Image 1 (cartoon, one colour):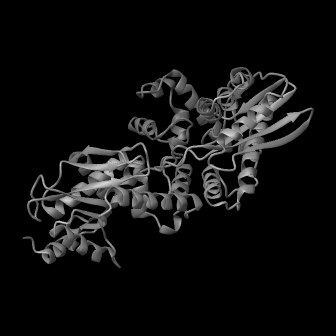
Image 2 (tube, rainbow, N blue to C red; image 1 turned 45 degrees about the vertical axis):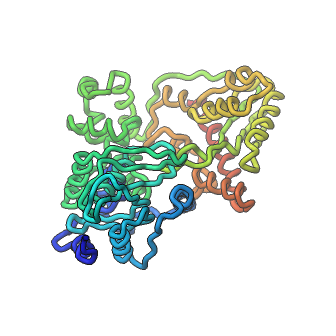
Image 3 (cartoon, rainbow, N blue to C red; image 1 turned 135 degrees about the horizontal axis):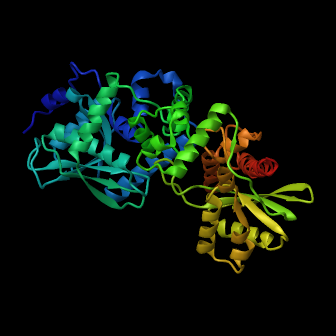
Length: 485
């Protein structure tokens, strides 16, 4: 039988190791390698603080993990300790004793600088390990319904780590999603080793450039600020991480490089055609000059009533987490005879979505000579889902969908704006609109609503309504700018 104390001592021995890799770093690398660069080379003072939404997600994730373990493996041994190292010693003793399942297990293999906390270790009798005629397999529990590459990479990291501890690396690991579906994932050691090698290279000083809009918490603000400072090519509208890497491969790394590049050189990059090259050149010129580049004239219908529409929903997935999926607020700003009025249709509980939608349609059917402006595809997509989900007595094609005009589509086809993105906030702020509450966004609004719907706490609901009203009014301001330019 394995000497537990000796194994723990070996696994915690970090002599000569100057690069420590925890599971979140592997996850972050897949999101954007610049996040890893920041962790090693940027002061922690530059990190974004946690907001209410992040706190909510963490709470949701922890609750989901605990509930999943309690319901699926109620007899799993839960590790409780004052330090991770003490917890690891308890884990090794439990593994030595052949415990069926171990939850929240701190694990270390410090001779390679590896550490983390595994959601669930389960005994498997199909192969031997240092502990005897059995070994342990990894199960990671995720609040997400759709498992992404970063979830899989993190699971592979834990699978390798457990293999180093027990002397046998399993051929697969499991990920349990939001719906408690158990997905068995083949272990890909080559892919994991490539990532670990890149992380170590970044620690040693390998340069990584920031990609605008690619990093999330806690390095989002710093990464975007750096991308702007360096005039990174990702500031060009439509240039995401994948396209950026292709452009960098041919020496096009900045906005100035795009502006100076010929259409032919841009079109030589895989995935970039003539139309995309023109859009990129226009975006570069707009950003460099700080002035919009007009592409074509626009024509919008002349009607008696203009309706500016914006929906607020909890979202099917935000970041890596899935939330309760529902729309809880349909807001409209109505402009008629030079009078402007905002009307919110609000679901006051998790069960009130249908009632809210019916009230909106009851109101809409009474309107005359109107058009409905909205920003991008969210409103049309979610209104279609509401019709499919709840049904209606009305001819929604004629009273709703045939009346909708996507101002985002009109805007980007008519102008290239000197903005880093074409979202409602970017364009509206450029044309002179300011949100009254700079601290709230769609995600925080969702948290406030869900808190209200589950606890009855009305604190912050006025902020949610105000935020939606500003979104509606921002759409109106953009429409006015477009027609006057």
